[in-house]
Image 1: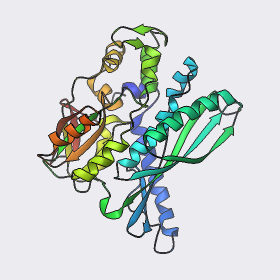
Image 2 (image 1 turned 120 degrees about the vertical axis):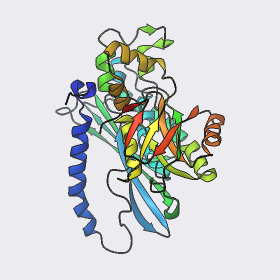
Image 3 (image 1 turned 45 degrees about the vertical axis):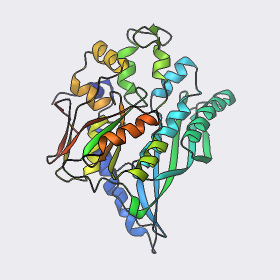
Image 4 (image 1 turned 180 degrees about the vertical axis):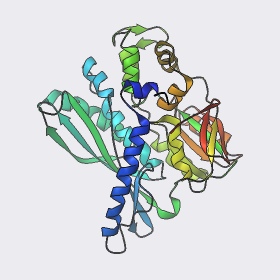
Length: 344
């Protein structure tokens, strides 16, 4: 089978999924070590977050994520005050996919050498992102690892809480549910290994790109959109059956929501923003490569019963998040986007 463009660039999502699957099988052995009434896992490893029972009818969600190779763009531009927003977003957006309210974060910064200015700039983004998500950053760790790290890396770990009765894990998704897509702010924080390989062959980061209306570097450092507040509001008003954050692996990640049941998704996306068309055209990438790697302008998907999708989309619109009814849940496995069947 021909490798995807992302795999040829150095990231083979299929192999990553196999590694994650084998890791999950090993980690599951630890579930048996837990004693007592509380602390039992409530969801299999591999969803958007881990869930454990903490008693009182509540569950604790945990997730960790990082900024990825977007930090290399920040390093090249010497602009570090926005990637902290991405770091927060990549964690809190996954927590809210299970109906959880994010309540606390920890950050982890790995540095090549001590750099007070760099850390101060990273903190600006972390604070801005956490404020937008109404989440406290209660601590963290800074590690100096000159023998291992070139530049820096940035990761967050977050926890959220949810009433057990209000967990949204996709188990109530049924055939005929509609899918509402909410706009992304751009590439977010995924696919940068491929995006950089394509775009930086012909362009510099300080080059103004007319179709973007800004420099390439400004576009690539556009922070990931944080969806926490509108999703929590939507959960109070609508019967949401599933929420999917479109990150690594793009729309193929929606398979997490069906839990192995014979259900799938047929989606038709709105026109993609210029940055995605630029990557496609300059990289000569296929539709499958694009749809399997990038969010294509849709950063979040919500499954809702038929008849409620338009009202849900309007609610997001009023909150400043463009949204559309982009498809339906069908009674066959797989993800079909713009008539392209996605692997993975």
